[in-house]
Length: 578
Ligand code: GLY
View 1 (spheres, protein in one colour):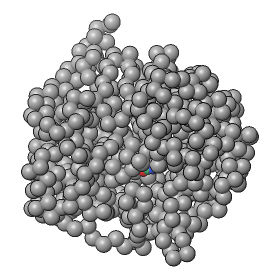
View 2 (cartoon, rainbow, N blue to C red; view 1 turned 90 degrees about the vertical axis):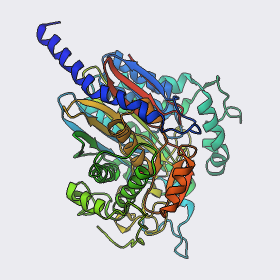
View 3 (tube, rainbow, N blue to C red; view 1 turned 180 degrees about the vertical axis):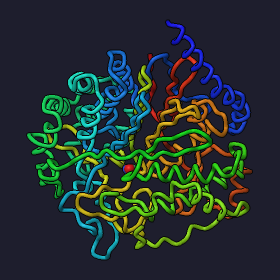
View 4 (cartoon, rainbow, N blue to C red; view 1 turned 135 degrees about the horizontal axis):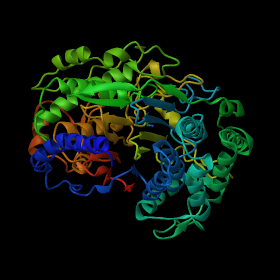
């Protein structure tokens, strides 16, 4: 090592110490804030590595990514390999017929945001999911009409083409092998498959057949093979995007649509394009966060929550009524704006987007918060124009390139429709549109005309893949999660737990979380995560409190010896580093 390199290494160790040590000092303070009823204390799955790190909702897929890094691939190669592997090993949300968002920050400091969200088919209409009384039907959630034009294959290949170092075959062969030769079912995968059998049987005999063996759910420890999916993946490997959007796979999708009354056409498939967007840049207490721009609402809503919270100065202790009230009121205001003002920027003018990211606007929103009492969410005017299951993976390579990707079929196992003969599930992303502006969707989100269905339009998302730089401008954290609208608040909590509450990343990810999305007007708390006295005082302040859980954060943080990957104990994933 040259002297120059040695002093650079010493400097970066010092920088790590500067930003890690204060966190360690505060950690004892925060551990006491988790009540004894909280089941995930100390249960995050953690890996450490000096060079590179991958964490995802599937241990098998994380190992695929880690091996791509070891073979000389960069973070984008590994992310693309993980994306295809998840379509095999994490069928509830990993996909090739869904869509997603990829935040990339290369070691030279440049950041990129890739939008490969699904689009509404050309034959889609504003009221296609309403019955003759104008009420929303469940056709946006299950069945053939629920599917938007898939974006995942075009997105993964676009990222690979722009930044990848290895060949397409090198990044896709592991997934093809896992589909063809099988992978060992674990207990998480078993429970997931068992839970969906009835729904699959109802909507798609082909899906029920694909995700069972001789009519039975494959048992933990058994080898699970998907030969049709292997053939589809091989077509993509050999022909690139045409292997999916044209040729026999595209014909199989169109035939599946005709079988079940869906509307995706050959022209919709051939015309699908991912979009490179300008990443949103948020600053928070000297840290910089790159997050996703519309068509996802994730970055803008996260930015407004953080900007409101920043102005409170040092935050009240973790788990306290004072903190939960402030957070809930910040989230309420950010989601109120999200639901009214955000949609697909290619179809709508997002006049309020700059405000949602401005510190002045956040200061006005903060001034409006009554610190002693809940502010009811205003009635929703949908005409203003201005399980759920998704999965996230984070990657850092030895050069310091970072990728944060969230992808989804929307509901767990998407629309429950499998493309017969091609071995993959279709998404039910059409439910993320405001199928009936002013009425709640699957997530209870009440959204406006700005997110109404139009042919070719992208449905508003909450996915929030994010990359955090420390005050020195160095890559320090990569983070994201599934969870519908709770994605945004989960990402907020992990970032705030580390920066404000000094938690280690395993604690920050395991910690109980709270969520408020304006409507329904309630604070949702992780069951068992907060003390009864705190719950009682929130109610006394005028909040309605409900209890739920969920999420599957996959995050990486810089540590003194390299990288620490953390997989949420709420899910079944794992981190893999080297
Ligand atoms: N499908 C969930 C989301 O995109 O927000």
